[in-house]
Image (cartoon, rainbow, N blue to C red):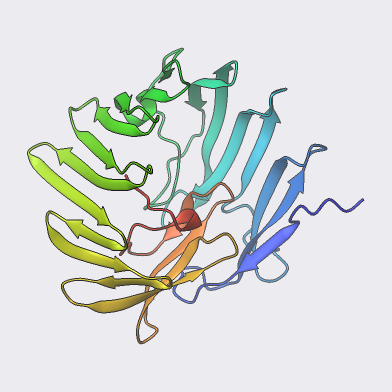
Length: 266
């Protein structure tokens, strides 16, 4: 029987630190849930295997992930296990995550930051909204009447405030880090920072200000921004993604739109 799950995929970005064609070979369980995403290089995926693999080693009866292995770059020339996660739930609500991996990721790749060691590391309100995440040092998240986050407070006192229109579209964020405040306003396809025009988004990329330069996106089938190039075709940013959306290699980041074309706010 043909189910239609993707069995493998490959890609190649000219500006990536990896010169070979890169890709994944996928396996699934009987319910079409991903089990293994085995990384490899070249069109046969047989070179440098497992450098950036992800493996789901357990699901519960509700389909929640119980354990996950993630591999990545651990030094300038080394690769290995960077996440060995065990996840605990209360019903369908995540309660805690423990990381047993011996290595930390090198550079700006993705890994889980195990910043807490408590039985309950996540909190929720009566609507099921996340209200705290101790592993991200988030002590409180407040929501508006339509369950959109209005303020995130971190354990060091830093905050992020959000404002929305009546249709739920984000209109403003205010990042306060110590005594520094960064206000970002979203006016249609125009983005302002502290009152000055920074970006003008287009269907194919954006125009940066004040230099008024065009930048173009190259996206994959999911809408993930893989490459950013200038008007002359010079690569400015490349992104390579794990199957669940984290970046395992990223060149110098020049803009914040990444996985699924969504803004990465961190």
